[in-house]
Image (cartoon, rainbow, N blue to C red; front, side, top):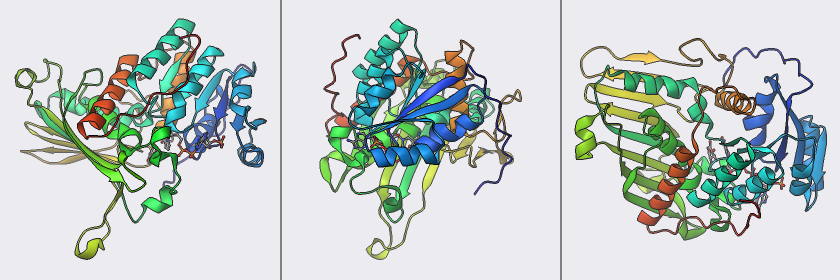
Length: 395
Ligand SMILES: NC(=O)C1=CN([C@@H]2O[C@H](COP(=O)(O)OP(=O)(O)OC[C@H]3O[C@@H](n4cnc5c(N)ncnc54)[C@H](OP(=O)(O)O)[C@@H]3O)[C@@H](O)[C@H]2O)C=CC1
Ligand SMILES: O=C1OC[C@@H](O)[C@H](O)[C@H]1O
């Protein structure tokens, strides 16, 4: 548990950005409702939920003034002229349709990760946003946190020389898995864009691309091994291990850029089995990135939720190991109390307001990541996630 000073609630300006949420999702309070409480320019104004009772209870619990329920709830919320931006916290396979519908209604969109099921869909979505002058952001929150920026800075500083390889792991032990997911979770449904690579996989992939400044470069997938989920073993991955070659900018590692010897590796799992006799010994949660450089290693503990707690271990081959933490940017910007979701919201609002966010992923970053995910599935012998049947009228 983390005890940190919370700043007092800000005065809301009357012109604050008015968010509507699609889906009374578990992640909505963490990703938007709580961060919005400390953002002076954001109001969560409406929630849309298919179930009447659930929607009303959610609205009451989170003090959301307007509730849309029933089969047309999502479309009704999107059509509300009182709403400026839509937060889409639906199963992955529905992101494209509802983000497109929201953009068509001239709303900005904050879309949960992964942005869409396919790279082509993300391309279409960004094209529409750009055509209409709207903001579209994929909510890979950890890359907005100063901790990942600091790790990138250390790697980039050259103090440990050139990058040789990078590894990211985000796994949950099988013992804890049932506390996180029900058996009917959309994460296990192929038709809803499920699979561990689509879910937990987006974090190490985005983080290792970000920390090594290869976030706009196409990674070549060199191997991928999926462990099928018991509910749909040939299409839905419970776990995924993938390796890549990483085209780092030549200024970083000229030798490697020509020999393509910078490698990346990632492992994700919804439910890593135990080990030892009969697999009875439990594993722990793993949530870490390591960059191996010529002169040592940079290790980030808890790269997924660094706002809660994290550390960056810089371990030179010669010399003393040091530990760093970064809850604010080096220039002092940010707040110790902000988590990654709060930094992400700050960036979103800055973009809508025409200011320069501390980080803004270009469409190519998001589209490339989805293409890499498609390649991973193919390499692992599983079908890439299916495209939405939704046909946008204005795309
Ligand atoms: N940024 C982050 O840290 C996290 C992001 N996520 C992402 O957020 C999204 C939602 O995840 P999570 O909060 O766990 O999801 P939940 O299962 O808690 O909620 C999903 C919502 O989707 C709606 N929904 C609409 N159609 C369906 C359907 N066919 N089956 C199931 N639900 C449906 C439901 O809304 P209704 O209320 O209308 O019934 C439900 O509330 C995912 O894309 C996931 O990847 C998830 C966890 C963490
Ligand atoms: O942070 C997370 O951890 C567990 C995942 O299933 C979830 O979707 C993800 O965003």
